[in-house]
Length: 80
Image (cartoon, rainbow, N blue to C red; front, side, top):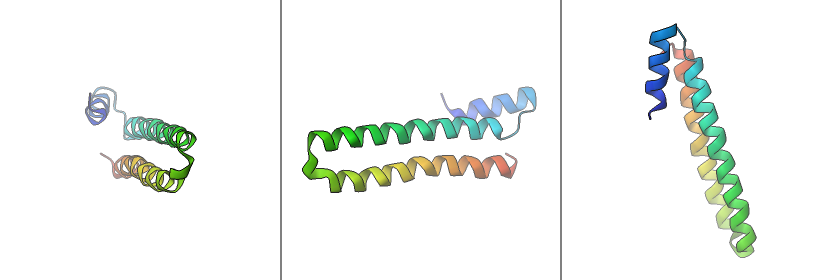
């Protein structure tokens, strides 16, 4: 289910502004970053020699997950 559609339905029904959009996106980004971090630690535990590559890829993945929360912040303050 699309979180944007949920936020739009809540906004139409109860007059909620972008705070629901920001909450859903923030929770999703937090879960994504946590999962990336956990799997990176697991990967380094299995193969310590690949820690450089794992670190690089996990930082890129975390940045992409955090970008979703930043987009939602822009939408929340933009009034959508």
